[in-house]
Length: 264
Ligand code: NAD
Image 1: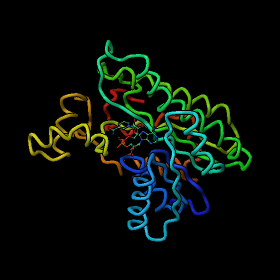
Image 2 (image 1 turned 120 degrees about the horizontal axis):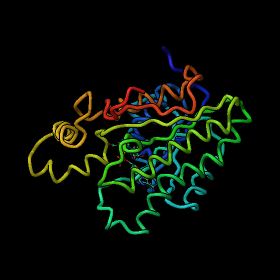
Image 3 (image 1 turned 135 degrees about the vertical axis):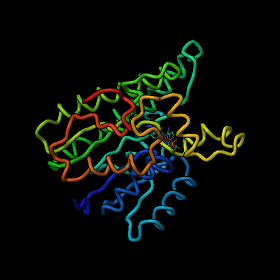
Image 4 (image 1 turned 180 degrees about the vertical axis):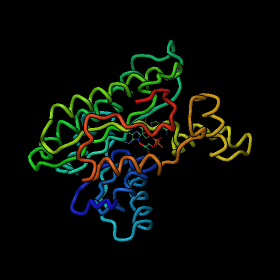
């Protein structure tokens, strides 16, 4: 299968590192123009330079915006008012005891993980519907289905994304625009590496080894019995953004290594 996104413009939120950067790379390799989003000039510029060296000829743009507020999303839209592909990747996560999670934290997670996608879809879907072609992807998580007891605040936002994506898919039914969710499991991203930093320093173990140990201890139902790479997640996203994926909409697509113990 040859995925060719030449002529398409893609916005990938939070794409200076981790899964977002891998998605941006995959889309650029498929010929799409990619708008990279980060919170600082330095990180976004660095991501652009990294991609430019890895994908010769890539057409890349940068958009500096913090998506944890309505004004931040407005700032992003001033760079990206009309796109063909929107990947809502921005998301924060981290373990926290339920009793210790205050309203402010809940609100921060809701604004960043859910409302950024609501606001961007509301602004960008009309242009896609008008053109009769578009792709919207929400990067949710296996934690949407398999709510971690130590990250309830996170799991709730990831479940909300599934509901949002499914509702939007039906809202634009028959338009040529698809809306889907992709559900990664534990993935060796920059954020995951940051969570493991102390352990890596303490034990001298590699990120891959610690990822595998994390999976075996915390997600023992994993079928692949290791963490995924960011490229493995990006591959699914690039496929669902392709023209070939035109019959997939309103779906929750798992790249969780089989962590969610279900047959569908
Ligand atoms: P990451 O921490 O490696 O990278 C996230 C990027 O988002 C960083 O570059 C960060 O600077 C940026 N960012 C954070 N807050 C932002 C904001 N308010 N505005 C703009 N940018 C912001 O993250 P990741 O692990 O690659 O996760 C990406 C997505 O994948 C998230 O939605 C996450 O919930 C989801 N996910 C990750 C895993 C995993 O194990 N890594 C598993 C399931 C789902």
